[in-house]
Length: 198
Ligand code: GLN
Image (cartoon, rainbow, N blue to C red; front, side):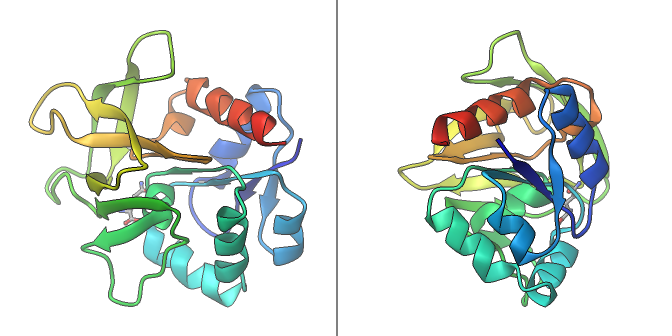
């Protein structure tokens, strides 16, 4: 099984390590030929406007859209969640996404004064108790289409109830960064999604 991490911008190394700790030798993907070799792809956190620009200039926008349409499993965290959204609010006007999840996300939704915060999030499908979730200028999901399963919401505080984890078919997205906290359960869950799609 080959899992790639989209390596245009963002916390690529942290995802490669989280996958390595989940016993998968993952590889960075920067070129269409590298994309063709992977069975699943992780889109890291970072800055979605930068990832969008670079995806266009590296010739990856349409190839990734096509692989998604063909059923390749993809997991996006934070900026990666934005890159999977059908609709982005508060994005830059020229910002592109890979599409795939029938949802509307709002960039930097938790408020500009709060750059980052931590909260607990219970994820349906993943056992072992709530995640200690780290949010960094994170989006939230404002609306979901019929085929989208809401997997997790913020449990407490001012943002309680906000949707921060979703799945639609082979696409998984979280607004938080499990790659930063050493909790491997989301990566393991994604690896299992890739295994089942082989
Ligand atoms: N605010 C960033 C964006 O719009 C996402 C932040 C993150 O990935 N930590 O892409």
